[in-house]
Length: 119
Image 1 (tube, rainbow, N blue to C red):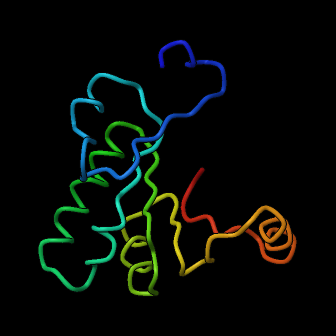
Image 2 (image 1 turned 180 degrees about the vertical axis):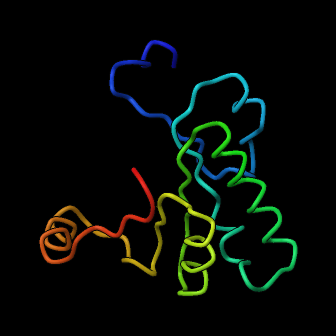
């Protein structure tokens, strides 16, 4: 990965908090994005442990100067929660279903991208 630094390649930690995504990667590599797994997003407003866990993950991302992406956003409540915490990007059915290339091009022409925060 080191060979790609300075060549315009950006690297993301996908599904952070699940499976093999580990804190050691954040320590060893210079990364650009931290993608919060949908499993955390889906429990916003349903589990009292969700807010402090997400607050810690988002804070860690900011301290490491990484942009944060929330996956699997499906409700206005989730959008509000994530906006309040300055999550940089959100993706999920709340914004659009998965699109093929032709559908995506049409979607992009009709509706501006929904970008939360800074890019």
